[in-house]
Amino acid sequence: MVGWNGALRIYWILTGADGSTTHNDWQLSNEGVERTFQHSQICFQTRQAAAVQLPDNLGMQIQIPPFDTRELRSVFGKFVTGVTVITTVDACHKAHGLTVNSFVSVSLDPPLVLWSQSKRAASYPTFMEVDEFAVSILSEEHIGVATTFAKPHPDKFADVRVNRAFCGLPVIEDSCAWLYCRTITRVEGGDHTVHIAEVIKAAKSTARPLVFGAGEFLAAQPLSIT
Image (tube, rainbow, N blue to C red):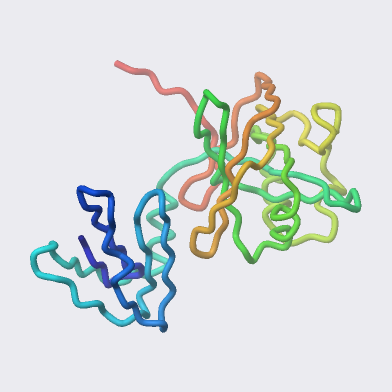
C-alpha cells in the first residue's frame, strides 16, 4: 500500500486470499474526494484530505512535491503529436468543432481511439451529449484551420472547406485522413474528460501530416537511418 501526498493520493487496496478487501474499514476525511473503482480496486483521494494512519507493515509513504503548471506544460510539449479537428453536430443540427492533439489510437481489434477535452471548452456540453463525431487528421496546409478551431469563434466553419460526404458530419477537406467514430464511454481525468470511441469508418489521402510540438506547428520530414 502506498500513500501519496502530492497532487493525488493513491491507495492500493489489499485483497485477501478469500477475495476480501480492507478499504471499507478506512475512515477518510470528508474534506477530500474519494473515488473507488471496484474492478481495479484502487482508491483515489485528493491532496486536501487529511492524512490517514497506515499500518507500518503495509509499506511506505512517498512524498512528491506539487508541480509548477507552466513547467509541466512545457515538459508535455516536448512530446510531438499530430493535429486533428474533431467535429460533430448537435440536436439542432449546428456544427461544432475544435482542434485536438490528444487524439490517439487505442486498439485495432476492436478499432478504438481516444481523445481528451477540457471541461472549459465551449463545445464541451455538446460532446458530452452527442456520441458520434468525425476526426480530420490535418495536413501541412492546415495551419490556419488548426488555429481557427483552437480559438473561440462564433462560426469556425465559415472560411474552412468542409464536406459531409464521408459520414454525414462535417470533415475538413484535403486532410491526411478521416475517421467516423462513436463514443462508447467517457472517463473524467482532472480538468479534462477522456472520450473513448469505436471507429466506424476510416479513409486516408496522400497528404503529409501537420505536426505540433513545443508550442509550434512543424512539418514531418523523413529521416534517413544509417
